[in-house]
Image 1 (cartoon, rainbow, N blue to C red):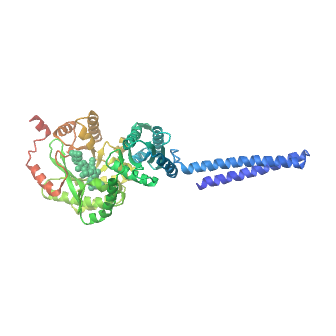
Image 2: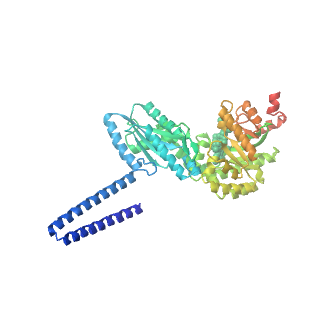
Image 3: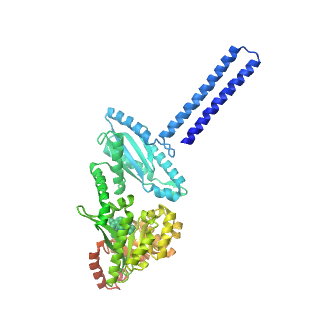
Length: 509
Ligand code: C2E
Ligand code: CA
Ligand code: CA
């Protein structure tokens, strides 16, 4: 900004200097031709006037450029928040006079940061540019569209007939974005979450409507709805989440956060090999809360380190107890978030806790999603390498759902691929999902990694996965995640089972 102002000032100074030089030169020439002074002065004034008019025009143009810049987003050329606010105020009051309904939409691209980090900022900007063009193309002339910042866009659709109409438009916008976009030779399908708020039914003030659309957008994203309309209940939900957040630190200190365990079984024999530790919050008034209700909150507010330390401690303590009870060398897997992975202190902490519970590093596996790895790949790789040197297993969780490049993945000290449950759960019905599972198993085999399939809900899936060559399986078919006490009972039953009776043996029987 300061640079463009100083450039502008320099421009004005040059223009003035040139005017003086030009006028003086003209006067000298005319005087030397012995033209009357009056004529010289008249011509000089005309010249000055012409130059001044030119200068004013340039200044006006500069002012216009400056104003345009201050009201538009440089990447997409769309109006920015300030201009959207101005234009939306006008459009809303005009619509009120016509007694027409308008819809304010807040649109947020899913996983834009991941794309930006993976493909680079230049490609990220190109994507935003394309998104803007598609939104504009899908809207009517009187509708407004703006980029509010980052990957957030606002739309004001005027004269929508009904709530359904607004929903249909929002869904059309999502479909427009879902058409693949070619970036750096990669074909990307952009998913977006859209929150809606209607005027005048839900408010007439632009900022209020935007805030409501934001609440709805957050709900759409969290529940994977695609589009959602603002409701007071959703607002209460947002307030309730804030309240939960304020209680989380004390809840960890008071031991309200507990861990449930879900078995991982050997695919061939069906015998248990280890457990995944999944956190739960035994809330004093709200009952048992699942991770999707509070893990995100912890991640966004710096409580993640505390949460993971707590889970790690409980899980390792439990693993020690199983081993002491003679259940063999069962392993335990703990989920690691983005913040944890960027925390240089994590490897030291893991080493200390393993030692405190007298466990070898091989007793522990850390599960990390592709998304987590991509936030800061260089730092993630450094922390992972330290963890791998300890001898801790590293699993890529939800494999198949991210944009990680395989060549980069190969550089990481990973020991396991964990195929995402969405593919596993659909593999018996959809050949595309079956193909993803099959190629993930092959890939893991080629890279010398073990492979776990999660989300195994029936015996057909078990048999299919065992035949494909999966090493381990996890899912409701074997057991839901359960508290440690219930797992004790489950383990006792497992020990009574015939170790020979695996899926292949069963299929033949
Ligand atoms: P995840 O790591 O992918 O965990 C697997 C989730 O799938 C668990 O949900 C589990 O209950 C569920 N699941 C297991 N088998 C089946 C099945 O056969 N069918 C279906 N439909 N679902 C199955 P949960 O416990 O609600 O955990 C959700 C997510 O929360 C986890 O996904 C993980 O990303 C996160 N999470 C859980 N515990 C922790 C933790 O201690 N720390 C961190 N950072 N994240 C955690
Ligand atoms: Ca996991
Ligand atoms: Ca998973």
